[in-house]
Image (tube, rainbow, N blue to C red; front, side):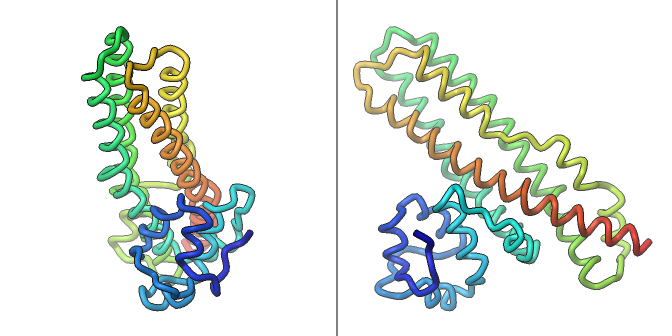
Amino acid sequence: MRITKDMKMADVIQMNYMLIPVIHRFGINLGFGDKTVKEICEETQVDLNFFLQLVNTYHDKDYFPKEELQSIPSKDLVAYLKMTHSCYLNDKLSEIEDLIVALQHTESEDKKYILLIKDFYEAYKNEMTEHIIHEEEVVFPYVLAVEEICKTGVISEKNQKIYDSFSILKYQDVHDDVEEKLMDLRIIMIKYLTPPLDASLYHKIIQTLFILEQDLSYHSRIENKVLIPKIVGMEKIISEMN
């Protein structure tokens, strides 16, 4: 069932509670009352079309309106992706790390495997953090500069410097889906690590890995299928200007 502007926002959450973090990244908090999606978006100054396209993308894995999302201004796409990065760095990665540390203090015969999990995750967290920093400091400024050049038809000295220092194709070549390594960690835990006596914590870690992996998959899809092709097209326009 597709989410529409006339649905009550509370009903959207009831339909799919996994949308809570997605909605929160738009700066929308719980406590909707009986207000509709359209009313909430108007109150919070969120672009209604972008909101609907994105939440439906997360709600239905078979729904991906690539052309509609590519029509969204790059600054709005970047703003959302930055909010997603903040969620990963400030919440999700630390949450999983805390759970793994807690697992170390449980009674288990597989201490060496738990240490392996901790080391594997720490390496992943560092790589993920570096990936996010690169996007925040290099890729996103480039995206915004390219959009400004195309919008104004003018290349300022600042934007020229940014444009000459990078290309979205470089990013495309090295942009691996970081969720793959989370899948490796999850498989290790499922196949090789004997659960401790209190298996609830162990199960929670695996469930949290599944949730983050799925979220990263959607995040990467927006970057790979929407943002990158959009900027590739703008690069062609700029090359014709020069």
